[in-house]
Amino acid sequence: MDSARSTEPVRRPPVPVKIVIAGGFGVGKTTTVGAISDIPPLTTEAEMTAESVGIDNPGQRTEKRTTTVAMDFGSVSIDHSLKLYLFGTPGQERFGYMWDDLSRGALGAMVVVDASRLDDCYPAVDYFEQVGLPFIVAVNAFDGRLGADLDTVRWALAIQDHTPVVAFDARNRTSVRDALLVVLDLALHRAVSHRSPLRA
Amino acid sequence: MSIPPEGGGAPRIRPFLSGAPARPPAPSQHVEPVPQAGQAALRPFILTGGRVNADSADIKLETQVTARPGAPPHLVAAMAPESQHILHLCQSPLSVAEISARLHLHLGVIKILVADLHHAGYLDLHAFETDPVFDPDTILRVINGLRAIH
Ligand SMILES: Nc1nc2c(ncn2[C@@H]2O[C@H](COP(=O)(O)OP(=O)(O)OP(=O)(O)O)[C@@H](O)[C@H]2O)c(=O)[nH]1
Ligand SMILES: [Mg+2]
Image (cartoon, rainbow over all chains, first blue to last red; front, side, top):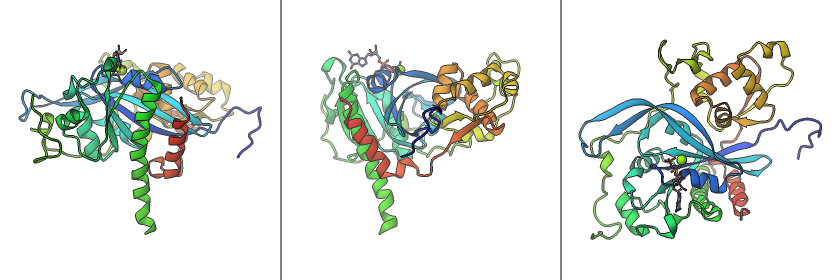
């Protein structure tokens, strides 16, 4: 324990950790962040190159353009030396660089899904699989109803068996907490299995 | 609608993937695009003196920033208002994302300003020895901290 003199401002920053909250338009990302954050969600904007492939035209047509994307975020102070950041990011397109930036150093991700509009989240699911970031699919129970059962969601999104699919309520603090704990469980497994080969 | 049972058959391909070969994203050598002179979006980038600092690519959203104590006031007073604002905010530790949100300036601009102020000796950027991603103890602390939330 360091006993800083009380006259000095707190100069030692917390270790930051982050979890990414991805998902399509209006699925409840900001609501999720706001439900558990210590501070009201803040917004930051970033310029980025979006790459989109038309679903109607799944051939070669790839469009690239630069666009501004708003990201919402909040934080939870775990203790004076550890702070969890939650970054909510739009997920209906591939925002290459921003997603690299977001997932670099992230403990994991939660893909928020509205069961009645599943196709919005394909790019997020695919991206996290490709970069090997532990993630869960969290189905937001709008008005307490899921819209589809979890097995159907898993099938429809072609979610791999080792990826959890859970139901949650984005407006409910403890429900968001429990969903984040599922992400952290995956993160813990990754950390432990990364470490154990060195000890073997 | 009939749904085949889970786990059976060949792996399926999400529609969005069907035309595009799966490739891992390129490593982030990237700096945010700088608009050409004359474009409407120019203003924020003027703050950076037209330079793109490569180090800004190493700054992450959650990177913690603090002002270095003892900056000569007359030098600070001569800075762009945005830089002064950053130094003021960072009297206590602040993340790059929070700086961007509080100043209402794009992340790419903030990263460049922060990198410049760091190189000029006005800001400290904090790095941590262990990568939390592979540190079970840190993750367990987050888990226990969240469990305490009700
Ligand atoms: N009834 C109900 N409404 C919800 C729920 N979750 C979110 N909403 C509402 O749905 C709307 C969209 O939620 P947001 O949290 O803004 O969603 P978002 O994903 O951040 O949306 P964008 O950032 O615009 O893509 C808001 O009006 C929320 O109040 C829910 O579980 N039940
Ligand atoms: Mg939002």
